[in-house]
Length: 63
Picture 1 (cartoon, helix red, strand yellow):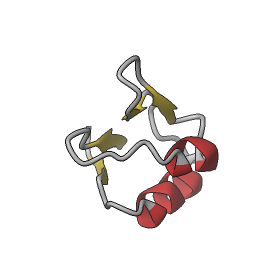
Picture 2 (cartoon, rainbow, N blue to C red):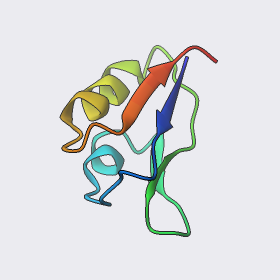
Picture 3 (cartoon, helix red, strand yellow):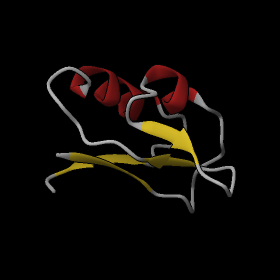
Picture 4 (cartoon, rainbow, N blue to C red):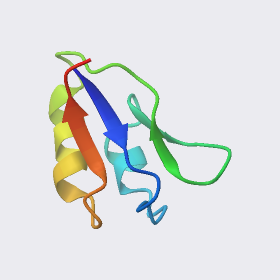
């Protein structure tokens, strides 16, 4: 599984980056991006980041 950020709707609030820095980071454009693969150890925090995103632009999908 992997996380995907829809950058068109990202508002750069940083919630995902602070909740799960193993998976999310800010790109050169200042918007969040998913840069890490989901594992058993980070899945719960990535899911929390997805569920907490104020603009709902994070998806967790099969890779």
